[in-house]
Length: 238
Image (cartoon, rainbow, N blue to C red; front, side, top):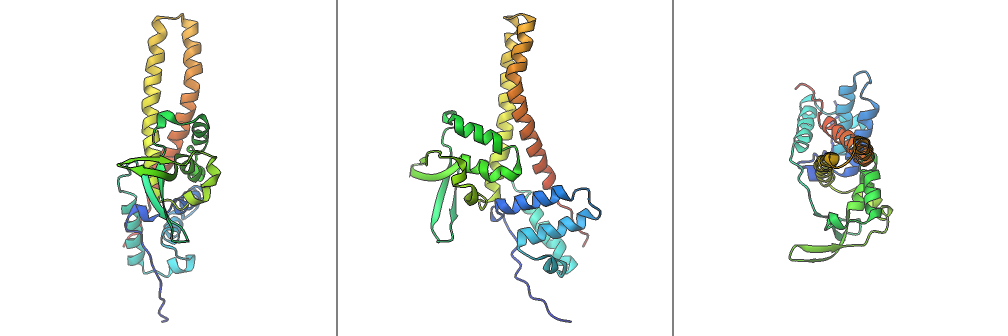
């Protein structure tokens, strides 16, 4: 029997997985969720994508090792994903660049808000949302920092595909929870106005003001549910 040597790089932490890898896995998972024998196929694709193997190489792994690698990847996705405001990436030129989240969301520009709302509702566009939220830090002192002015998210689209996926997941969960809170507070405020306006005016105001909030929350809810679903890895039996 020929001895097959593989260079197997198994991520030990969630931050070792790139956003582009996670996006690729989500896309394949969605395309094959109803396929016959989907579990085994997704197991193989999981190892290929997150460990850098070919299809043939993944099939040549001993079953025990295959299962162990899957479990390790699963452990990565069980890590908590808090909001990360600063992170660094090293480019192909070995230059490290620090990126910071928009320092004050209250001062977000209209252009940033519109782009973020459009991109964050779809994992295929999460690198674009990241390019809105995070930009190179231009000044940093005593925990206070400034970032580049917003000049369209396309400037850092490709760069953000290589961002650690835990940063993207933390941002997604943060905005999902923030959106739920804002939705509740806004609807509570609108309902409070019922004692001050006629019934017809109340219904129109609630409908008009609630539509935009509900639409954004529905898109965030869908993206959040896809996130939860994607973390349910299928394990082979040892």
